[in-house]
Length: 483
Image (cartoon, rainbow, N blue to C red; front, side, top):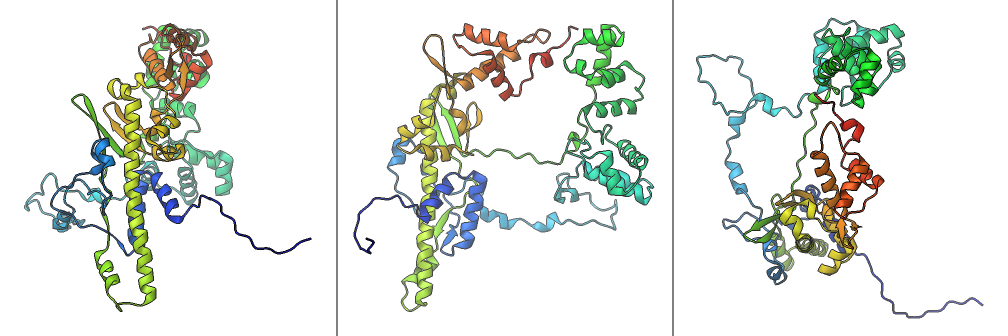
């Protein structure tokens, strides 16, 4: 029999509050994403504002020792940004940087200083391969069809300068004959850089040799008919196949080595994105010092002006006060979340320094096996928290800049019962290959045997896997002929 009944039951549940979700989200953001999140929160929350710069440089509490860090009481604002005083930016005379061209230029006038900015410094994007090709096409007297087809071809070039479309695509686009499409492609291939518009590396090299007038040479025949043997550097077989001597083959290969396989790369306008480390590790005397990178992070505080409005009676409606109180709580929580994020990164870095001290002292060859659980148990946090902290975070160390994930490596057992990290094995393989004889490169089997002599038992296929991960070519592609 069904009936409705009320009862009271106590239960413990983990509720994911919006504030907790925000703290977790902030924890896994990279530096660039964190900066964007800070600016977005300042724009959305009227109670949150950037603290004015102070004359005195404040000490970063997260850069102190571990014992002192645990005693720090959470402050009202985040640490101050290092660097120049932002107030000095307003003193710049922007008239000195006017982007104009003097039509009445005269050599009688005083010459500008050598370090004066050029008008070209204000171009938003550097010209790339497509811009360079279109500029060349504008200087040619082309009919309407050729102009349309060549522009279509330029638009279908990849970053290497290779054509991603085929002749049928050009014919379908221009509603033209195959001969007209081939003619437009040859026209494009006659432009600079030599080799542009090719369908593959082979065609690119042939176009470059043809531009040099070397279409009747041994180098041209090698590329056209025996490029596979060239890739494996099998010069003896090349000599037999072409009916030439090994000496002539080597001379032809020298000519080929001066060509550019990817002609469009030198015209790439892609900007290099440099890594900004989240934490610095310096060695001072015999000890290491950890410092968090707070540069670019604004100092945040709760608005004093709005707080004073909340204290005044009858200054605003109930709804307005409720709105400000809610935003005040959100602002305080946001500031605490940022502080907690910084402290968590510091604790994780401190733990990594303790586990991987040999790496910081001597290099990647001394990296020890480490898993997330080891660090989580050391600092008293959950593995998921450590995983979020180490994602997209970088550390500047005496050995270079590394992602925090790099310090976690699986263990490989040695023959004497010890363990070694897989990253340390990769370092040893890289050193072996760097020191090898180019005429007799080390095979994967030989590398496995060399590791075995150091009591590291690794199978040949594992060596091959590590070599592929390091983007090192197989032995047949590393072999060089004797001079």
